[in-house]
Length: 301
Length: 301
Image 1 (tube, rainbow over the protein chains, first blue to last red):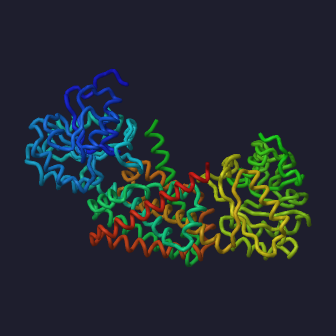
Image 2: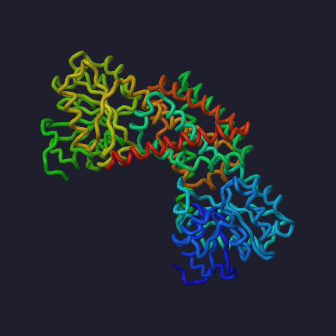
């Protein structure tokens, strides 16, 4: 526990959605020493009771208005499919001074949804955000306080964003131990398609391909640690990832097409026995991946 | 340390190649209480000296004849590109009573190489084997005693294999803590193409695709744990994996083609907004992957 009061300018922080991300924001804020009131919004009374029993939040409602109505900071951490509806509800009840942010994995679609839901004043206080952190788990019990420690958070403000709102959201992520960066929503979506959305598509596709094979029982019985790591993300929530891919369709197709073209090239090299070309590709990949690991380790120090 | 003498019927075990696999066999045998002489064969005098200094083996040579000449059990753990030459050298110097095994990742190509190198008597004492274990590391310092603990080893004997030789190789892997299974070489190659060789091809191809993109610096800067896991195998030795893919070309192309067809189907579902189909694929994959994890956890208990 950190004895310094954090985010003391906010008497009440509302978190809409208490899955892996929302739950980790809640637990992280408490662990960081946030002393105000944490209120959650979930989809059922049963989940609301469980969220309080799990001590994720102080109070919890199956009603966005009840949670968001008196809030100073609203963190929308719902699945992408619910975003349009949730932002509309938030718009209807959110106090005029409240800062609003989200945690969605694609940002252009979120900005579009916010523009439909909010007037210009609320839009200025809306700071689109995306914490680059996660596990393959989901649900009320998936969150943990250190999920964002030393992880990156990308915010995608534009020229209409209120600097005070941006500073408040930055302060929240800093309190959670994250490193905050800014970029445009469009750029974010290209980068995330490449490093997150495409890998999920590839992992799901591989496991489904193998599961359809006659030898599937033995295939999985003899798979080792490399396979377990490679396919970990295929244990992620299918509905969530279908919706993330859908929300970021353009950039996902763009990177998928680049990948499929390169895979066709690799296939030709294997089929024709072009060892030199195959080695070049594998070696370039190893060099790039080793560089990524080194950079990651340096960031975490 | 296990005080019970293991493999005491072998006074001298020769390990040809002391990389990740050979080095782990050496360290594992010692940790299991093997009390006989461990001799290594490597490619240079400098490596031979280092292998002894690292206490991988008791003695080590840059000369296969010197290592294998007096051995009772010969474990060939060299990269696939060297296999033809190594087996020929082993055939020329191996004592008539010695049992011979290997650790290669593809088995049909190994059996073909062995058939070129060995006469019928030596072939009967040759037990093709493949431990399903590894890390992305390689070299003399990569091995560790527990690499094979609770891991599977596939042996691919045929009707000409001497049952006593088979039992000896089984005993060695059991001493290393592994679970031994048998199947045909052809079946092994299909299963391993699916769970190991194809994933390596896909991971290398992904990283190389991203490394060629204009945003590559940011792509890697904002990649998270899921990406690190998904691409871990792309840090494996490029020359080794080029040669493994080459040695198992038919099965690799077979599973790669199945994968590419499924990926084309997934691409169509994303492009056309067929949410239902995309969800089905992702959900089937999650179910299969969760089942794999459960089975793996049960095996390790």
